[in-house]
Length: 123
Image 1 (cartoon, rainbow, N blue to C red):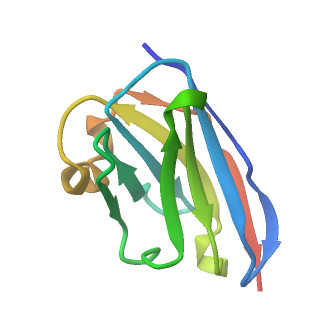
Image 2 (image 1 turned 180 degrees about the vertical axis):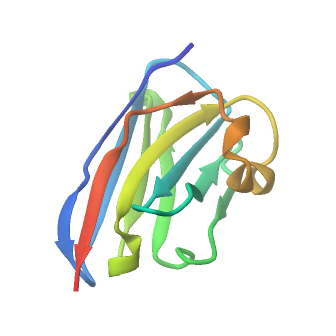
């Protein structure tokens, strides 16, 4: 089992940027970012596979970029043009099977989760 530790959350004004990081203690082929806002269900934000393929939620396409640095065992989420509706707890997740499009919609198929980092966007 791998351990995942997120960081980089904080408070920012609308239009600003943040970069989230997730340090992973081992290797998993699929890595992802999910988020959950108060009173809402958890939703997939972005998934990246070991071959570099990615998938994004429609709400973040063109604004967010998922990437990973295997040498640093770190997953990133660069978030630009942030909106108040991006306010949520962001979680990274790791899995071994599926596809980037499938996993974006199926959080239960991920095996390990981090503790989350809070992003607050004010208008």
